Length: 329
Image (cartoon, rainbow, N blue to C red; front, side):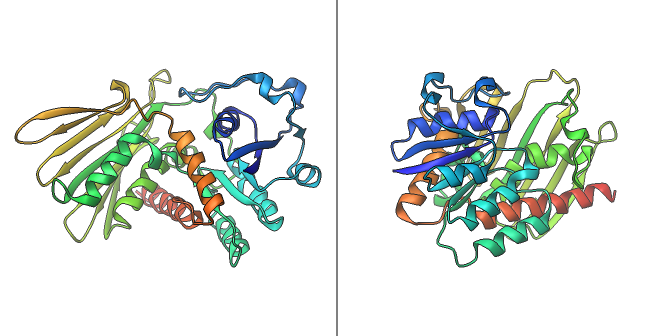
């Protein structure tokens, strides 16, 4: 059993706490949040996520800082679900105290910060996992299996997209970082697909980007590989602000095509020359629980996480590269 401190108890922190309660190898040791325990309320986000009996928090201690939590309770790991600007300072503190770390995506905004945590982790026998949860979503896991076993031949083309209504609360307009509002959707939304593409085929040999004339918060990146494969990554914040979230992919193999769109439920459509069939994915719905179970398994076995520090660093680095290409146009 591994004891976990959750830092940040908003939407994602509460979601992760609910999944920790479900995982037999984990125990919620404490919560760190600037809001007092008596004032904490359930928070809902834009996706259906894990809920839990609020009474389970009755005996869980709350602390105003990670230092206080580490000083006063036993824990094996720290899960960081705070705003991004706090990720690296908290991760550095956790690692300095010998704790395993799970940090929500993106790992950070500043690549110098990423280098700092890489340096701090060097030589440490600690698990470090970044929360790129799409890797654990059943539809994307099936696509990965098809790519690896080549049951329908080589992957020739893959379109990955992720979009939602432009935030009307201005969260991406007041960043105290170098990330502009126009780059917000790249680091907030599409970094998931950037990470997934990198994990699937590695770094591309050639990249081109474009942005439509009507919007500075929408983009497409065209990745080309020396073996002839091609991946398009795109999406962003769209108008109107009420536009529902959607994500999906369209994959073309040598002998089949596969399509998924979140707006049409947990279904994959696989088409060949012989037939078109629906693959039902409703049985494996909680991708957040799957990634927390991966974190638990890595800690218990002492093996690296599926999405580790180097993967998180590469995703941020590529988002910066795409941002620079977009802003230079």
